[in-house]
Image (cartoon, rainbow, N blue to C red; front, top):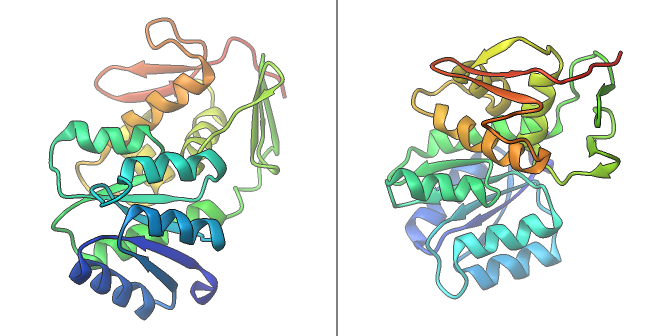
Length: 234
């Protein structure tokens, strides 16, 4: 099925763009390259892609702006590439809508593994359990991949939706960060627990959930998170 997957690779460094393209094409993916932000947005507007590999630092239009523009109309999985090693830069990428990130220099093999994991998570059918979860004002339509709060549909990324469904299927259960990395992101590399923290922060914002006085998602300090709604309905 990989041959049917279309990937947009946005990277201004030609050697990196060509190397990433070669590795992905070897796996059977259909790849389009873009060397700057304008070309990326033009390609995304003209074609439908299943995943975007996006450099943070781009000419003409920045990677952050490209990510925000894509997120305005699509929940396509986005892997952000950055030469910056600072934690705040990585968190910023996740907060503006990226699903994952890699810091340069990175292994093309690891990038391919991340691509596989994100595509699998974005397209896999959720385990055969309840297709509709209702917790007070929160309704999760698993089959339709939609979430409503007080009747208003929320705009969640694929990662945020998977995180919410993972937590909400077992109210009261505490998940460690590494468990959530494996279940939500699809891999278990060390050091990516902070990725989950950023996704939780974004999800809480959309749920209007105050961290200090939460309604749905509670932090279990030193461990991880649990979903503990005020009311649950079968």
